[in-house]
Length: 414
Ligand code: AMP
Ligand code: GLY
Image 1: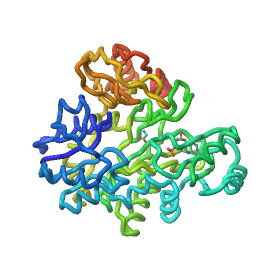
Image 2 (image 1 turned 60 degrees about the vertical axis):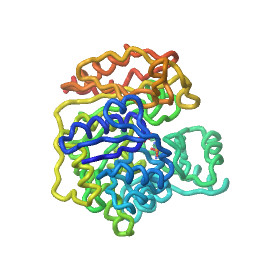
Image 3 (image 1 turned 120 degrees about the horizontal axis):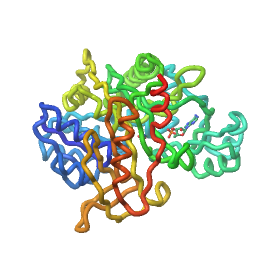
């Protein structure tokens, strides 16, 4: 099977690695890719935001399957253009990607599908905003309606700050605060059948102890020793299945990865957000633990053939820690040279915002590397990830030191 993978982050590096481990893969192409993915795939320059350019590359390479990593090509309609060319695509259509592209759309699907989520109001002017802030009370949750790379959401007890953030966008969703622990649980869907992956937890705030602004994600781990045993079945029944059925009933089937961001509240599971693609950095802990050959799995989903498929997982635990550039998330600094990529057994260094230059590998994005440790338990996985990342040097860079810390302590207590 010839596969084209679209994207250039740590998520795509992890996907590329697993795709190349599937015996049915004959060629892997990636566009635009990064220096890490270059070790595994043939790279091609590409304007991924232009659906016709993406489809043209897939046609030119004569691939059997296109896998789309990031949300922007999906929301722009890349999957539609690829399917129109008669090529299988793992990734939802423009219409189905609205589950991520519009918070308001996602809420309407959840309402019609009976999926539990926070109560909300969509507001378009100051008086509507103020009414909603007063209705739900502090802590205030204010979300810009469109795509915002994880940065359009403000959660604050400061009403002035909440109002200020709300007024920056012409359309905002204001909602009830959900106080449970957060879990990311993904479903692989062929439009009708959906299969849950194991749960992972992401660390969204930039600094230790969940301080500072939201980011794209600073680290993740899986499995979750503290989560209820039936979390996958429960999420399948309450969230993934009804959402996939509702999208099919609307005539816009969702083929791809449905990312459910959940809060495990005292009143049960509630959806915080949907994304229409693999999470980053959750993919960097989930995909190394998946035994099922990935290219075959994604091809089955893309060709509406998932029925009867079951997934196999390794018993291992995985922890990933993101190395961020100085100034991330507001103003990440590019160009610093990265050194210290030592090879440690059971550690995978996934490239994200990196470029190859004459000086060596340099930082070219906010999240530079995602370092995943694998081990028998979270403690071992964590130790490996931190041992590796502590040897990497990039001036001004930083990482959180508490990824999976509480879970690994709790695990030892069991
Ligand atoms: P989102 O982009 O919707 O995932 O929001 C980003 C982050 O903001 C989430 O991961 C949560 O940490 C937080 N958040 C969003 N909505 C809520 C909510 N209703 N209650 C509590 N926290 C929330
Ligand atoms: N880990 C958060 C995201 O992928 O949006």
